[in-house]
Length: 265
Image: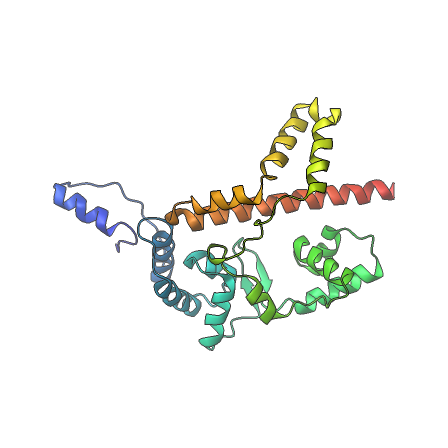
């Protein structure tokens, strides 16, 4: 019967003389209640300070060692790199496998699977991202990264220290990835797509065009949107953005698979 979220609202109800309130009961352990309390306090009202969020992350790492850095980061409003650093400082090496934000279990160290993916790509470059991902047991996006690194002559395994420096929390970036204007080539391609009758004269085609146009806004417009998001919605909007990115990535993978299938025919 511990109040996880809403202590001030409960006090206000008592001051009004209310005898009943609307509440949501959550059946779980004390550690689950702590996570819920942290998640609630970073999503609305006066957000927790950075120091409070770091302390919360250390506590959650101790009670949920099987959680991935990204899952802890999502619950505390920190970056995955910050959580990984806190995990190292606490002396917690974690488990061999961790549960991610999507509930799936993945190995804590994916370097071996990345090397295996690289071997498959070298032996059969025609394999699609999903085919390699299914054989190795990693995500298609990870396979995409491995393939890109091989094409650039780099090691398939990402250097962890470089990765943590390259992945700051999206709210703390000084130079966002979208801080550049849309390339002229891409804008020209978009104009050709808009003129294509196969897209312009069908309902699904027009929906696709509207989605592509919506995501092709100028970098300055992205900046304007970023700075006008209320602070208490940062984490919520960030998670929606990541989910939409995953949807687009899956959409791109399926298109690539179709291209591979057509070529095979």
